[in-house]
Structure formats: structure tokens, C-alpha cells
Image (cartoon, rainbow, N blue to C red):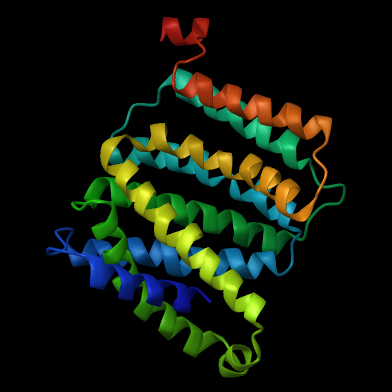
Length: 255
């Protein structure tokens, strides 16, 4: 699935892209390895053995991981206000999703957590080494990621052809939707953002995936949004407001 998505992106962006890729290829290959191939393998394997809500919650480790690595690798300042706001936003995610009633299996949980850390590392490296606009950076990532994914699926997976031949029209439509909206448009916007702001300013907004997913499920699937989930959404937005200094704290003024 990842190979088909990134193959589509590589083709579409190569047809639409203009000009050379300025980011050094050794960095592009490394970024794609962390944020595409390794991250995707770990996350999707973990999802096979975890509830989606638990995986979503564990995956939020990518936000503080990126903020920390931005400080460690990119020399960004660990701002007290942004740290507090990020923690408040993560608390909102915990309230929205809820803690699991049973302890999840260790290895799948570890795999999903590791996938979040690798993805965060890829974004920090993009911030450090990226020299291109959003569309060009997406093209570079897809061109470097697609061969890695091809090698990985040939080496590690089985019955790929049978899966392709037996896929239903609805499944193909789902993959097309994910490719266009979840990867092509989303990553073009994301890479453009990373060119303009620091990692600690951009990453907390990744947490918006949780309430947006909740609202989408309610509108499309008819799922019910509880009062607790609405409270969690408000807490999450409060955390983001603290990150961008819309809501000011005494701690932020002292810092």
C-alpha cells in the first residue's frame, strides 16, 4: 500500500515538478528511510495488533520527541511556554481517546512508539537539511522512498499480487483518498510549513489529527461524540493556544 501511494506521488510530482532538487540526495535518502520506510513498517505492523485508539494515543510521542530532537540536533530553544502548551495538548488527546482499559501488548506498542520517534527524527532532519519548497521536497521524499518500499515489500511481504487482484472498488477508492488527501496534499503543506517555522512551533498541530478524526467519524460514520471527548478537544485547543501565545501564562512571561 505504501509503495503504491509513494509511487503515485513520485509520478504525479515528477510530472508537475519544475526545477532541480536542491536538498542533497544523501540527506533525502536518510529522511525517507526514517519518515517513510521505517516509520511506515513499524506503525502498520503495530496497528495489526492494537486498537486504533491505543495506537493513536501512543503515536503522540512523536510530538515531544520532535521538540526534543529539534533542541538536540537543530539547536532550537526549549521554550517553557511551548513545552507546557504541548503537554496540555497531549493531555487533551488522552482525554479524547481515553486510556485503554487493559494493558496493550508490549511489542506492538513499542513498535508504534518507535515509529513516532523515527517520523519525528525525519521531520527534524527535513528542517535541518531541506533546501526545497513543499512540492519539491515531497517529490524528493517520494523518489527516495518508493525504491526503499519496493525493496521492503519484496523482502518482507507475501501474496502482494493476490491482494491487488482481489481488492474491491471501495478499497481502491480508500487508497486513492489516502494517497491524495492523507499524503499528497497533507505533506505538501507540511513540508512548506517546516520551511517557515521551527519544529517546536509546527509539531503541536499534528495533535489536531485526533479531534479532526473524531469529527470526521461522527459526520461520515455516524459515531457519537461524548461530552468527555468534547472536553478533551477543548483542552487540546487550549494547549495549542498556549503554544502560540494566544493564551498567556505567568510562566511564559517569566521565561
